[in-house]
Length: 104
Image (tube, rainbow, N blue to C red; front, top):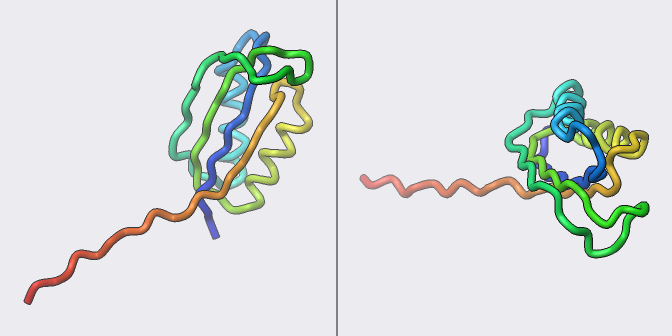
């Protein structure tokens, strides 16, 4: 069953092509059965503390609907690659749709 997820990850600031890295992770999700709802490229920002000898990072946020196995595949790609310095995935609650009362 598909669940809503939000993944925020930080790319190394010295990457030549940030958009290629973003597209790579989007395609990994899509290949594993996810539907990407929104991707926000939040740009380069200063980190609160040094991570892997970097003081800045490029922030990217992805919202998508996917089975849990897709998340595992994405996080494995984050760990194996050297372009992501930090990531966090959170399961989002389904938005509640209120039904309007029917007037008779």
